[in-house]
Length: 118
Image 1: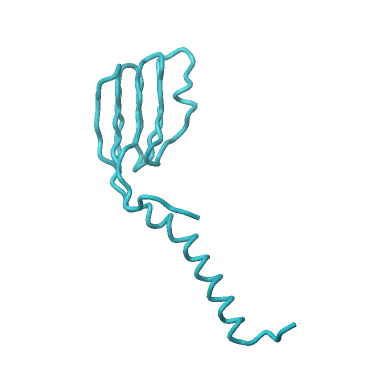
Image 2: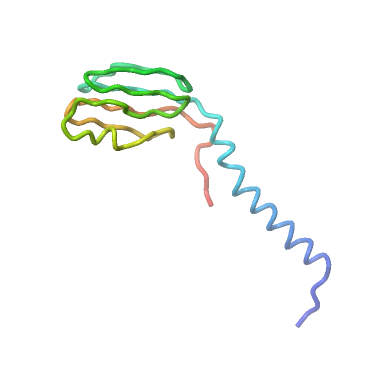
């Protein structure tokens, strides 16, 4: 067995620190993105809002609350209320759907980072 040299230990520590930085930094890059909220009703766009924002929007019996870049349904007159149980959405590509009212809210936009490979 060969002796471990000081240079080997330094190289090992440096590689591990660099790997940790690469794992922690991508979420920080994802914060700089351009997001919009699109609310569709019966296949047509009913509302468009740039995020972040603080507002409430009512579309055909569904009331959405926007808090910064988080969107949730606070009231829906549909019988099952599944859209209210969806919770908050905040990431590009996420959506809330109310089938009885034919209302869809989705976050769209383009992130500065196209993909992350781990």
